[in-house]
Amino acid sequence: MPYVGSLVTAGTEAFSAAKGEQSWGKAAADTGGIIAGGALGGIGSSALAGALAGAPLGPVGSFVVGTAGGIAGAIGGQAVADWLVPN
Image (tube, rainbow, N blue to C red; front, top):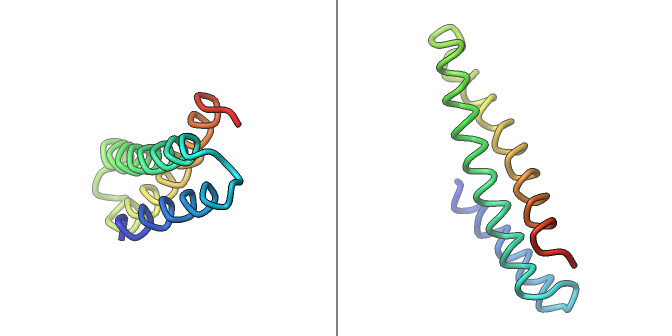
């Protein structure tokens, strides 16, 4: 499923650039920031939750924490991309 989200993100950003709403450089930076931030946030939060809570958290808890971390990471990645490549 991460591939589907990455394709949707890249497609949305490319469509915005093709319509002239943003530059192609901005679209590439946004895509990279969102995908990398989401991946790092998901991996980091899952690893941290597993290290802190261990088995009591269980697989469902790790999934929930990983998903929340992925969302937070994507938002952070978007913010970093906006800071590095402003409009």
